[in-house]
Length: 200
Figure 1 (tube, rainbow, N blue to C red):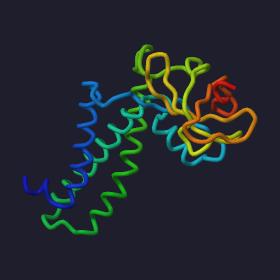
Figure 2: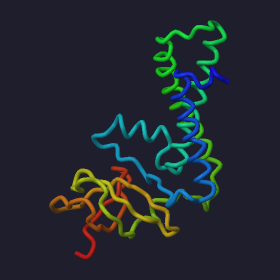
Figure 3: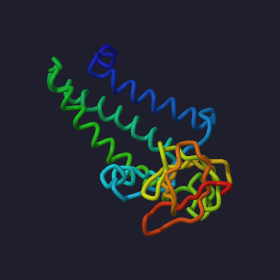
C-alpha cells in the first residue's frame, strides 16, 4: 500500500481520483449544466483545433472527454510505475519524467478512441446536437471579442445544454465579451457559425 502513496504515484492518483469524482458528479447530475463544444474552427488555429477535434470535442460532451483523459492518464501512469517497480525496487527519480512523457500521449490517444466509440454508440436523443438546432439561438460572446474572423459564443440548445461554439460576424466592428448575439447560420466551409448582434 505504501508504494501506491509514494511521491511518484501521487500525481496519477490525484488525476484518477478527479476523473472518478467528475464521473460520479456527472452521473448524479450534480455538476451543473452539461457543456460541450459544437464544432471546431480550423482557420488560423490548426494545431490547437486539430487536437481538440482528435479528442472528440464537438462530437461528445466535454465532461466525458475530461473524465476519460484524467482517468486514463492516472491509470497509465500508475501502471507504468508499477512495471518499473517490478524490475527494480529502487525507483529512479528520472524515471518519473519518462512516465509523464509516455502517459500524456497515451492518455490522449486513449481518450480520442474512447470518444469516437462513445460518439458511435450515443443515442440520437443524447446531449450531442446537430448544428441546425443551434441556428436561430441567442447566446453570449465568451471570447474577449467576436469579429469577422474569430469568436466564441456560449449558447443553449433546445434541451438546455450549454455549448461553446466558434462563430464569426458577417460584417461590422468587433463586439466585446458578454454581448448577446444570434446565430443566424452555419458556414459548412469555414466550420463555424455566422452571428449578428441580438436586437439589431
